[in-house]
Length: 295
Image (cartoon, rainbow, N blue to C red; front, side, top):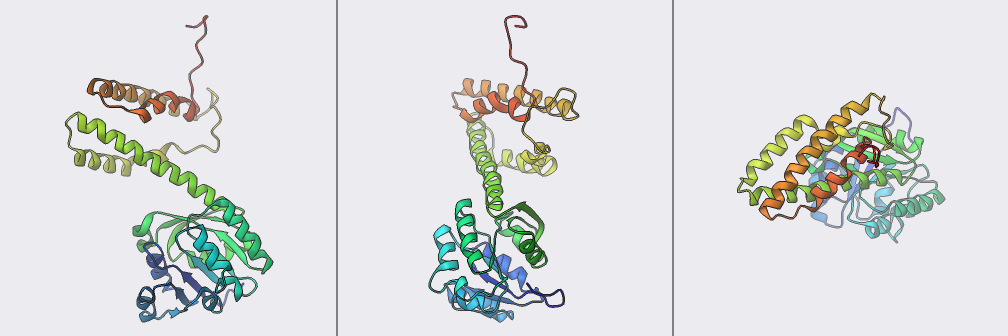
């Protein structure tokens, strides 16, 4: 690692839709920036702005002590780190490699073990927020790695992130990203179901989208109920029970009404049925099972 008086030189590999705006924010990093991409035209704006360009990851590693990797998939990440011209061919001991690509958590753990053989730190550091957040410097980063590695990346990452969460050891950053994106894409699927219902009801789909974006910006959307540190059932005397019980009551009422509307319009709403069946238990406020004595 570098001393406090000498900011670590940073390298960035992969200047695509996400990598380019992240790397652009790092142009302001006082330790200097070296970039690398298989497309020479992708590095041109960075060299014009004062960055160094490297032709291979191995060359880049000669000039950087914190290296960010934003490429497409597990195979590309593995090649960038361990290939014939990979980072580990030249990386100095103590170098930190942070992979922003969403890869398998098992791949992250395997690569961390290979890096350790070279006295190099590995961090799985997927990001959330999209290119717009990268441009504004407001990405969320979920980082799995050692305390020392997190200390090394915290300051340079502040150039493009305003929320860096240390999730635990290597692999946990990716696991958190997969959980986060599960919610993201399941909600997209739910949105398509809502649009089918609205379309069958003769409603303006763009107006519905505006209402969703407006209200979610106020309430926080699905994240607004992710407040507890466990998914276990809530004790009736717990502070959260009446709050989430109220959410359950509203949700079950509205989901039942939507399911009924779908039945009348002939629209299949499978996610609505699943949500109606699972909302209460998922919130931790399932109703007591009916028995012959209380039915």
